[in-house]
Image (tube, rainbow, N blue to C red; front, side, top):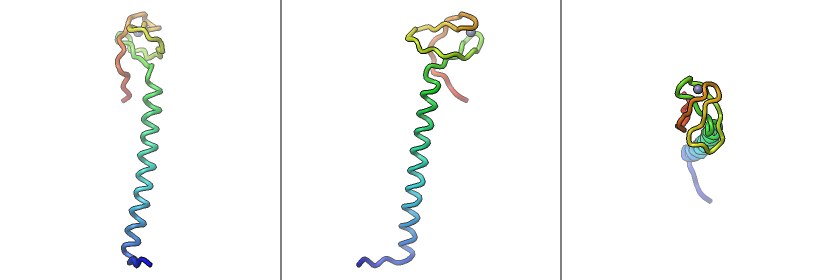
Amino acid sequence: MIRVSLTLLVFIYLGLFLTLVLGHWAWFEWQRQRRERLAVRNRLRCALCAFEFEDATADELPRCPRCGSLNERDRFRML
Ligand SMILES: [Zn+2]
């Protein structure tokens, strides 16, 4: 039989609990960021009129549906 003091047992319990909570937090945060990246993957903002639109085509310079100007594919940034 392994003899463990009550203090060590409490520390082991707290360590396991914190590891479990931080593991879940890291997993859900990673999933949330992944969903956010997928949601804005095809989103573009027009450089001329600042209109935001979705463009899933492979065009190098997608055309803004509002003003018709050509836009470069930059990474869409959320605030
Ligand atoms: Zn535009």
